[in-house]
Image (tube, rainbow, N blue to C red; front, side, top):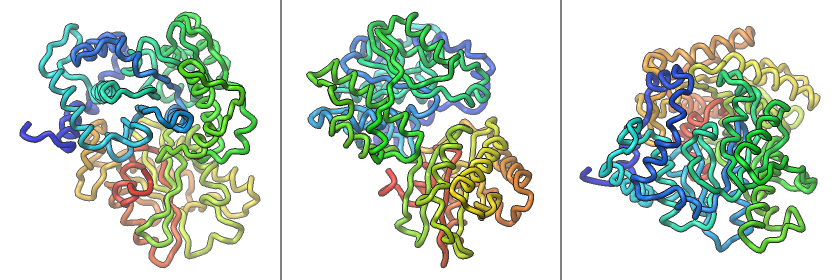
Length: 501
């Protein structure tokens, strides 16, 4: 390439995305391709100049789960940074909200565009200059595998003291699961609704997640359904983890205002505290006589994880507040609505909600997920929350407007480079099939809801423009949910990056 800028790196990276047809083929294989995942990832690692043992220098806290793994990773990262202020802490997460470099952070800050481009093309060149050793390995890895390689390369080059490593998908066959000996591993909640969505039993999901256990390495988890817990225990024995501990509750947490909103974050914060405590006891002279020393408390209070139960007051639009949560399962949506429909958030004081104020839901979900079930969950949780707080308003009209829009960033049909996706079927995107299905589901759930207030829109920019029309002489509270890609697009289009990220 003639230039090697960040934009160039993102464009090259996007060529590694799987399109909708390829993803369908993987699903149709029933997971048979998974058995090659780790050997292929090790092949790529060797081709960029590293051995698996080199990754042990990253001093990894490895975290997986179906709910809360990103939040737990954010808590763990923040606690570590406050407990060890002179250390260099790496954090690898997915997906990103606005810029792909958000996935690779040093001391809480995404690596710069210049750094990302540098590390990206170093990996790219090494792969282009070598041949795969395995017959199943393609010359270039897919999108997530490539970014994982870039993250490993960046963290090793920058010589981090510790790394919080979030699993992408599953555990056993995940691209991050090539670190031979992490310091400690953690498994967050195993979501019941993932059983239906993924077409797997809870036992199968637990088997996948437990695949990050390593010989001689302590493991922590949270209270799990019996079937899932039994499998995790079996996996811990099979893979010879030194221990598997269900993180005991920490009573002092109830007195802390966590940096991440939502009652469900108590469990994630608890797990993170136990993971970091175990890590520090192993790697330093830290003595955990007090489970929550002041540095831990400060870390929990200062933790940030954009796009998860996040409140953002719009600096550009008068009386407009955005409530951002990428919840994309029925369980996470329940937590999202419980957070939003509460005093001080989307629910004002008695009598506050007047004719000149609006509550808007902007929603999207990936094709194949159960939109009607999701929206039904939203409605039922709105109803229960209003009852909980003694509110008499009709839950069917809690939202004054609902907007179902595609995850396309701009009104001209283009994506921001970092947000481009090829995973949506072309005909679905062109005809807005998913969004129309969602609109029909809402109309069936709430038959009396004004049809004029139900929008099906082709882009996020269209949705933001509708909000701008409403905010004239009015107060607008906007809940954005159902997709982290949607949340990231709203942050980008509405110009919220400076305060939201």
